[in-house]
Length: 376
Ligand SMILES: C[S@@+](CC[C@H](N)C(=O)[O-])C[C@H]1O[C@@H](n2cnc3c(N)ncnc32)[C@H](O)[C@@H]1O
Image (cartoon, rainbow, N blue to C red):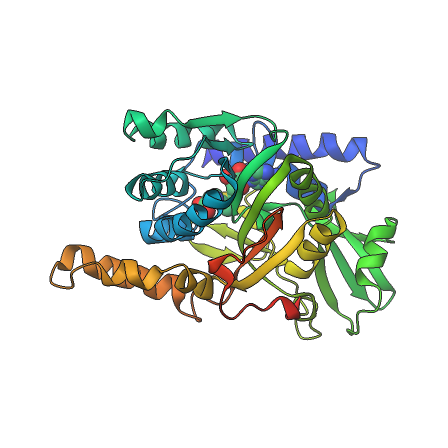
């Protein structure tokens, strides 16, 4: 407890320094960036368990290797067309990379390389431990990069990366739209709304037909990341998996509190100003913004489906059917994982998959049925 208090006091000192450099008001995107990625105190930079039962939340690849094995089928189709490598952004514990590499090996598909681009040194360490367990002929293809490669050919994967990008908070109250930021009051961080100054934020809410009180998020960082990925990608596909909505649903009049949420020991709450640096902070992805950002930098938005449809389109159910139901030890966890990954009430519908491609002319089979690009 004493350790906790001194940790929180040290984080408050860190935030006070940032506030002092910013006229004593920090926009929420800057706050979120420091809370997640401060080199010493940021949530993702600490060497603690984040994923799975010992951590704070669970992601699809952590639920079952059936997820990574199914994604590998889509990767195999793309690599057959383009050749080249896979670049995984924010690889977490390394489990998705490991499962994809094993499945591609089983399918006799060779990659030039599997690259991890991970801002957290602590998570890079976990990825290295995981990959070290693979056979030498597989792990020899794996490399960690500290910058996005130039002239990349192949596949860029991002599972639950876009939801970790910092968002700006906007609040509609009796005075109209304002930007929500953070100040220090009585030795605590508290909210304070100010007039919006950034034109891009005005533009984002322009025309929204909602009533006050209403709080929502705008992720300007999506545009920067998509632009950087586009500059990196010569030929191939970016596949992003994440929870989120299309614009009309994201900014629905009934979604009055936005989508910002925090995850700590498998509990979800909406107060990012408490337990600083110890909770994951995330916002749903506005897939329409992501798609428009991609279009603006010359990428083709070539598919957009629910996670359940993507997995089924890629042959998830064949992998499941190949497990003998008599082998209860293997079958029961697989059936339970299938329920979580596919069910519309768990991850199947809330999670979407979008493909952004360049120089690929054939349709990707992960998006062959129930493509919903018309909703973006
Ligand atoms: C919610 S975790 C998901 C981890 C993993 N992909 C999974 O599904 O289990 C978010 C990951 O994205 C990484 N991340 C956050 N911002 C990033 C960025 N701009 N570029 C690359 N990775 C990023 C984090 O360090 C972390 O590894």
